[in-house]
Amino acid sequence: MKVLVVYDHPRRSSFCGAVLDSLTEGLEAAGHEVEIADLHREGFDPRMLVEDEPIWRDRTQVYSDEIRAQQARVDRNQGLILLFPVWWWSFPAMTKGWVDRIWNQGWANGWARLKQEKAMLVGIAADDAESFARRGYDKSMETQLLSGILQYCGIENSSMHLLHDSLTSPEHRDELLARARKLGQEF
Ligand SMILES: Cc1cc2nc3c(=O)[nH]c(=O)nc-3n(C[C@H](O)[C@H](O)[C@H](O)COP(=O)(O)O)c2cc1C
Image (cartoon, rainbow, N blue to C red):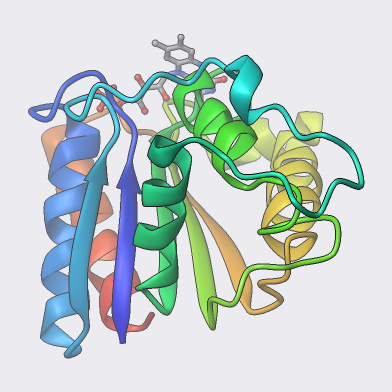
């Protein structure tokens, strides 16, 4: 299938960027066609603009050209992956703003839902899985991001994967890259 990967990191050369490369390799090895939305390089502005604020219950509202182009990019893909570093136990403001502005009433919520067959959240986290579990951060991310955004907006077949201990050894990073490749291959 055609898969849109939304990449959110200030640097393309970051470890998250290496995860993007491995994930893409895996997706392509499985025969998927990958499109990348590199939000920082594209200069995406995550701030909601007045013209894109939903007018509640107004089915005639037309969003800005920018938002309609972004929606068309999502629409031409049957799969969707959001790839981000975990910042404060969530995704960064850039991805949040991308959702706020684009997943709008009449397209992803309200009287319409997303039509993608499958979606995945991939977060890169410095902290280990045990600390996440001990404080419930993994569950809270699942509730808020997976259930509250992806599934709420209609993509039932969606999952969340955290790649932990991202700042440890180069050997561990290689393991995380292998895992990212596998996630792509099995998508
Ligand atoms: C603003 C900020 C907030 C962060 N918050 C978290 C966090 O809540 N949990 C965590 O495990 N790591 C956190 N980190 C660490 C990032 O997850 C880490 O930088 C990333 O996984 C490493 O990838 P990179 O080198 O590609 O940035 C944070 C980093 C920054 C810059």
